[in-house]
Image (tube, rainbow, N blue to C red; front, side, top):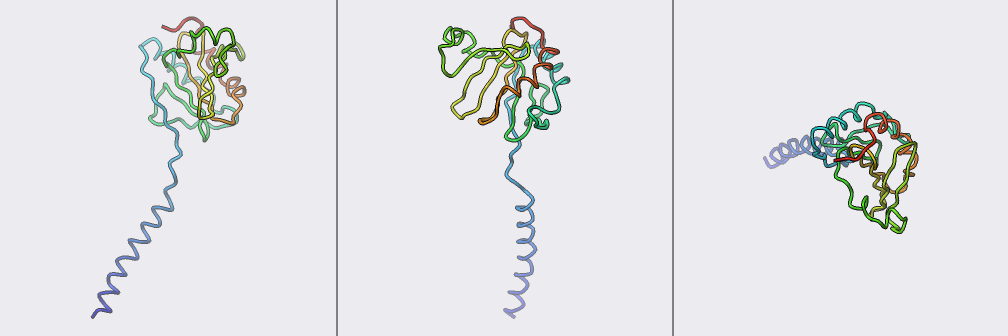
Length: 169
C-alpha cells in the first residue's frame, strides 16, 4: 500500500515540479526599464506629446523600447536603456554659476546640432542631459559607458521640431 501512496504522491509532484521548472525557465530577470512619469502643466504636456510622435525609432543604434509605466512623456531605447523624460522640472544645476563658467567637474553646458544641453555625470556612471533654452525641459539619461554625443545627435531633430526655443515655465 505504501508503494501506491508514494507513487501517487510522486505522480502529483512531478507535474507540479515540471510546471515550476517551466515557469522559472520562461521567466527571465525583468530587465524592462522603468521611468518616473513627469507631471507638467497642460502646455508642456502638449509639447511633450508632440515630441513623442516625432521621436526616432532608433537612438545610437538601439531600438525603441519604452519604459514602464507607458506614457507619451517617456521613451526608451535598448538595454540598458537610454531613457527620455519630457516635462521634467528645471535641474538646480541649470542656474548654478559654476556650471556656466565651467567650474563644476560634474556638470557642463553645451550644444549639439542646435539643441543646448546641461550634462551632469551621475554617481552610478550614467549621464543625465537636460535641454536648455526650450519651452519644455527634456531629460535624457544615458547609461555608463555609452557615448552621449551620438544619442544627442539622434534626438536633436526631434527636439527642435517639437519643443520650441524659449524659456520653460
